[in-house]
Amino acid sequence: MVQEYGIYLRKSRVDLEAEAYGQGDTLQRHRARLLELADLQNLTVSEIYEEVVSGETITSRPQMQKLLHDVEANRFAGVLVMEIERLARGDTIDQGIVARAFQFSGTKIITPAKTYDPANEFDQEYFEFGLYMSRREYKTINRRQQAGRMASVNEGKWPFNKAPYGYLRVKLVKQKGWTLEPDEHSAVVQDIFRWYTVGVPNDDGTVRCLGVTRIVRRLNNLHIPSPSGRDWTNSTIQSMLRNPAYAGWVRWGNRAQVKQIQEGVIIRTRPRAKPTDEALKLSKGLHPALITQECFDLAQKLLHFNPDRPGPKQSVTMNPLAGLIRCDQCGRTMVRRPCGNSNKDTLLCPYTSCHTVGSDLALLEHLIVQSMKLFLSHFDQMPLEQDTISEIAERTSLSSARIELFKELEQISIQETKAFDLVEQSVYTPEIFAQRISELTQRREKVSGQLTNIQAALDLLNTRKQVKKEIVPAFRGVLDHYELAKTPTEKNDLLRSVLDHVDYHKTVGGRYRKSDLKIRIFPKLPY
Image (cartoon, rainbow, N blue to C red; front, side):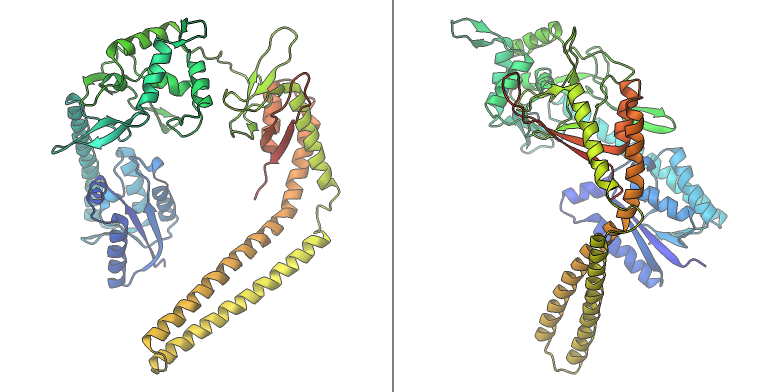
């Protein structure tokens, strides 16, 4: 009969608010309380599930999914939780999943206030009623929070946790809520709007307005930090130019969350609202504006007449290397630039601030195939079923070292036992005993770390044989079928089946300069 018990810990919204006021770590307090309860009832706790992410549904709570899987597998006789409301606050479907898992497995739910036995009809009804009331409480709290945020928007307060670039989020004095204050980057925001709407002077005394791409290049050349701390991008500049906060407004409902069900899974998206949407609300903010209203309105007109023009949406992949090539300078995925007439397609890094030089797509495709053949030839020279002499020697050395470390751990345990005996016999003073135990603990941690490293090395050796048995046939199959593939999509699927990614390096190139093109393939390995 199963006698193991589990503990499930999750923070509620009330707990998060309490922690914000300095009331300590909720999970730590709950863990201590439930372990104390298990000790009082002589329960053996074998697993503790700590939910460190916030989620309304079971699909967004990985520890809850793991708990339900173990409950359905009849692993536990019971689960300890602070309140049954901690188990599920999702919709009726989620509540039914939780109730059914505990009911069919016969797993008890133990709280400090009451133990719920699913075999008891009254306990089962009380449990289901508790889940229902938990959902109602969640809805009530959510409505109250939304109403509070809307009231803050109407009063001109800043309702978001993050301030726009160029502002600092500060607490209002002697009242609830937050507002914004300009920071050291506010002048950069003003420059961006001025360059886009008024322009910059030319050498001949004329003035020309800068487009989004030219602004990106200018900021990156000046080494001005972006909101993310990385290079500036077109989308960042466009979002800033469309943000009414810089003109002194607070916008609400621009990216409201929309839930949809796709193949039985709830998908959350945040589409950009249109100016005519009823959910979109603008209120005059308490924070100072960085630009005038006239400047902001002019920027919107220019954006309207010069919209971002995305490439055509294609149902099939036109690039056989799509998603595989990474720039080794900035780490971003390189993209295909199609060329008309007789010119060849090019693969390049899409960020103008990057120093990487593009290359012909066909040339890169050829180099990747040749690199795969070279990689395969390395394995062809090695026995697939048997370990090499070097592998046998390495395995023997690691196994011997592991045995010695286990012996050392055993010796440490003996020394710890002796230390306890000596302190009981008053040979060791408490101070000497504490120092001795500390020294032994440090030795144990050091030896345990060495054991972990050795075990990892042994695991790597044990998987090499399997790697050779899997990688060689896979690479051969891809190379045999690659030339027969008729479409870029088929080629891309073949390459992605064996390659994780390819690092690309080229900073020198062109018609009259020698190229420093280098690539490095990273196969998909099971370790």
